[in-house]
Image 1 (cartoon, protein in one colour):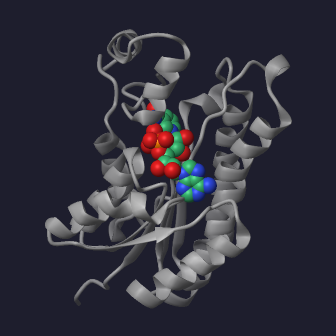
Image 2 (tube, helix red, strand yellow; image 1 turned 30 degrees about the horizontal axis):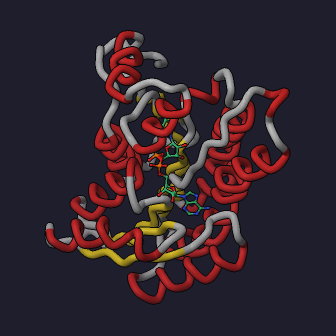
Image 3 (cartoon, rainbow, N blue to C red; image 1 turned 180 degrees about the vertical axis):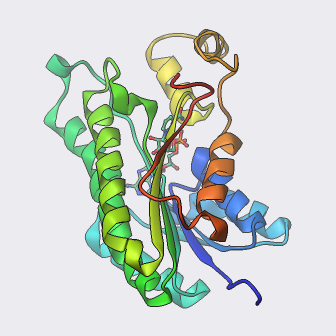
Length: 252
Ligand SMILES: NC(=O)c1ccc[n+]([C@@H]2O[C@H](COP(=O)([O-])OP(=O)(O)OC[C@H]3O[C@@H](n4cnc5c(N)ncnc54)[C@H](O)[C@@H]3O)[C@@H](O)[C@H]2O)c1
């Protein structure tokens, strides 16, 4: 029997880890919605996918906005078919020590990670239940274990793990799995911005991080994309509710 054509949505896919995930899922044969805040910013990822012979569309949406999410998922369903693979990757950091953290920075981080993953999953599950197939992959982080200056982000990333386990329990009967990936240090604009914030050249920042990592290097977006590819595959249907630390060791 020929394998069904799958449609995937990857949020925050204009750059970084999300772009690598979108590119990989397209190479795996899926039609991919490259979703990010600014539709124009998705062009690079979409063009790279198309140049490699894949199928992709750019979708501008704010994952923390209910109406924006509903419209985006509807648009994807019309353009590419009902999405049965969802990667909740969009993310932001607003780091500060607790005593200096503003309510706006707390809310912004919760809004993108937790509210965003909730809204996207709720909108997409309808298509997965209809298809009796689904794969949801949520981006957590080693910061879920606690990280100085990230009380908002670590709470959100720990929340992603509980969210994932409950999705796995609720949606399993429709052959929908949900898993989380907790990356360690991955070389992207997000970690480059952290280096800038702490006043360190990025190369030194990466070298210092690599010293703490058992495999003696920092991660690349493709390391995460590879793990998503496995979790989103047809054969991974008995893996659900798990958190996989992709950090070059037990943790970074
Ligand atoms: N880079 C790392 O070391 C690392 C480690 C652990 C976890 N993560 C997680 O991996 C994911 C990707 O990180 P990255 O390093 O590629 O970050 P990045 O900043 O390079 O990319 C994040 C993308 O998300 C998009 N985005 C932000 N808010 C959005 C919203 N409301 N709606 C839609 N899109 C939105 C941004 O525009 C951006 O394109 C994030 O969830 C991040 O928390 C990253």
